[in-house]
Length: 395
Image (cartoon, rainbow, N blue to C red; front, side):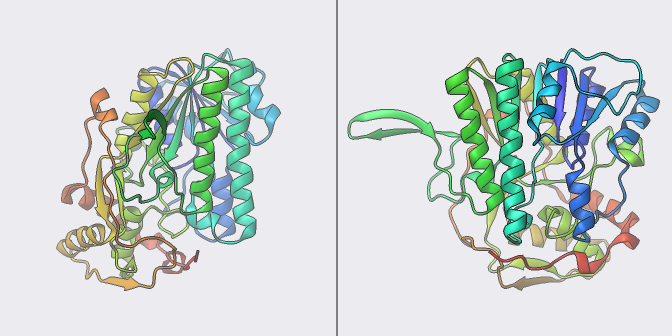
């Protein structure tokens, strides 16, 4: 297939690009380096430096003989977004050679400001999150409608769209009977941050595009991702994805492992009963590939809950502490006042069978997997700066 990946410099985007390329697909990646700039501006650089997209694509071609085409630009600009579907975009890599017809079979949409804490820092970061995320999605919807109506859109949503309702979370849809009549509706949303609110709006925009214009969309409601290793990231140190360990951009499992190695108490917010669904980085790639291989039909919005297991924050902290202590680290777990407005103890029972039915074989969070993450962090422990871990963003 011809695959276009938006937001491909990030934690998920680059591994996805390598995975599709390794399997023989024609891959084009797009980014504007927002996350790099934000990390620098806020002094929260990742655990180790990551080459830019052009350098990574060059190394990828040297290692594999396969070309990943790179386009640098801002998808919030309508004409730039449209250029990706009209065939008029300019490549940053390769400089010569290669052709692309501008009509991808599938477009994977990661191109958003991805952090809830960043979106809640102040009115400036909140406004930037809203403007960037909604403009990128709007531009994508119109570009596909006008220039590539057969292209399958695969959007990365978030389980955070649902909140923590006191009923089972179905996979995107809910059948309702009301006053003797029945209907099928998007599952009620209850976002807990500005970032998550933009993701709810993304889903609404995609549903609008499917209903009104016949677009083909799969929305993957993903939980927090952990891990670093895929078959491709092991080929070259420069192929590893961003690994943030700070409160702004670091996911909780990755962050806890770094805190354990650094001798920084694991920061459990409040009672620690907050429960969410998680998945391994390898499973993210598998889920996106399954979505691409099983596209939505014309006018269809498919929704999958993209998680493989659920944990409370306390359970994650206990697991990290157990593995860390077994490796000789005196890990301390510390409960602190919760800076977030959220239910700390709640019912949480999401359905997540759809992707398994398509063939997903999950990689579960075992002690062995956790120990492997520790080993990676230990190799880079001299790069850990404890002042970057926690800043207590409140909402």
